[in-house]
Image 1 (tube, helix red, strand yellow):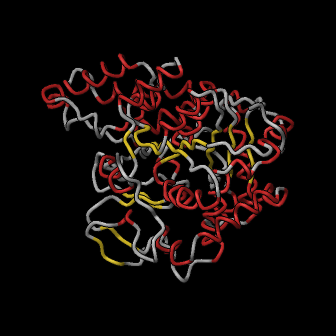
Image 2 (cartoon, rainbow, N blue to C red; image 1 turned 60 degrees about the horizontal axis):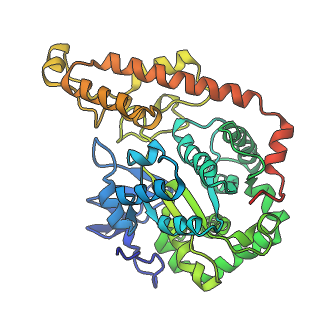
Length: 423
């Protein structure tokens, strides 16, 4: 059995950054430790040292999580009687903490709930932002359980050059994108931190309980905060941790202490390792997690997606023409320099962004494998592969836009009203 390594130490360096390291202050004071050999992965910065992206096997070892392996997926299908989602089947959700315990709960007829979130830093979400929500929707349908979705507009105000009002407005715009995915309003509560926390004393109580368990030295070690960071950043981890405890939502769960499952990208894991460390001291369940890999920028795995550069990704507001132009002009190719060379040697699907995007959004396994074989053999050219991606993505974005346009202010209020959910 793999031992989960605790994040909270007596001011020592967190294991996330052990290896060959040097202390170094980096841009924006986000990270005080620089790993000179490995990828950088934390809630605010993800940097790959390889064209193929993050080394996720190494990341599992560094984070002390467990692989989502064939045995776990087979058990999921056996327990639920439902096929595994392609995002798990293809290893895009690749790591977990205690997912097997959630299956134990379901098998025993006991309930749990789902929790995920979104940091609203732009008016529109992009394709990569859909990934955890698509899996949450699927999990909600499979297990028939409630879901809470936290919009961390407070976080974005602290970390970005945004006013409270700007961040809060973006939260409500992003909520419409989330609702458009198709969540069940009877089982889903979406909340803005800026608007909700003041309405719910129990949520704030849990924040304080968590804060009392983590010292300043410990939170610096976990998140790399420095003496020049504003105090709001230092207290924020407790806000993201609090939804992990069902007692933070008494209007949903009453006095029930239910475990929760958190689908999220792997860069959010430090928050929940901290939460898992303090949970037993507070008499709470440790949250279980499933971790996704990162959705790459159009320019390749070593390029960071940026809201200030719309050509780094495909937004959910993009028109069919914009999608076509972005893919054709900016999607990094794993093809060869000439058609002749490509026909002879084939392309590299591991670095080709069009193929990588299809891994996320083309749910036909046989077709995906045929595309990979054809591209690798040289039978399929880069332009033809990009055409397949364009024809796959355009209807997904177009249908999302239609659903979003149908969302009324009244429906938005229903999703965001504190209320009893069907459990």
